[in-house]
Length: 156
Ligand code: SF4
Ligand code: SF4
Image 1 (cartoon, rainbow, N blue to C red):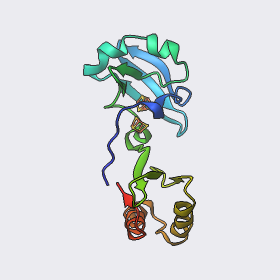
Image 2 (cartoon, protein in one colour):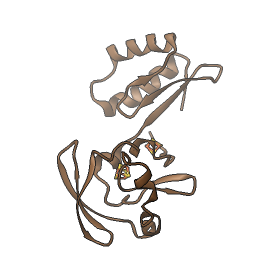
Image 3 (tube, rainbow, N blue to C red):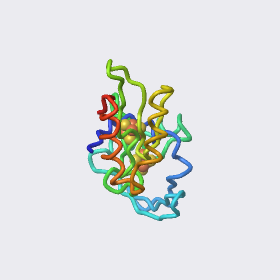
Image 4 (cartoon, rainbow, N blue to C red):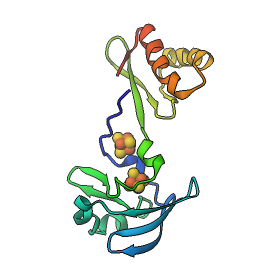
């Protein structure tokens, strides 16, 4: 299932304590650590993002944001896209948007395969999904999609 990141940056806005710069090793290169996994990594700012990276007003105004996040027009962009840690590369905030048969958005399924919804009917169906879904997330994702569609939901 394809995931289209809109580069809104909201998932990076509070990761300043988790993606940490240990040492600057060059004008655009850093030794870093991903605190949640305890993984060190080296990062070089992408060549095409060095201009936006060099403006420090955004990190100064947003002390909890990841140090590598910068505004670029209407977007908030990761400036180390090439070297960002694996959990950033594989992160998907929303993998399914669930709509009623009338087309109203009633829930979203996160990349961790959790449902976010206030709709009682959908929450009830989700309970059934939790009981029956394959344990393995890779197999579960298409299974959940098919199950929701079978129940009459529009899923994208
Ligand atoms: S993963 Fe989601 S929250 Fe993060 S930048 Fe992309 S669209 Fe925004
Ligand atoms: S390294 Fe990039 S993708 Fe990861 S939190 Fe920072 S700005 Fe976001």
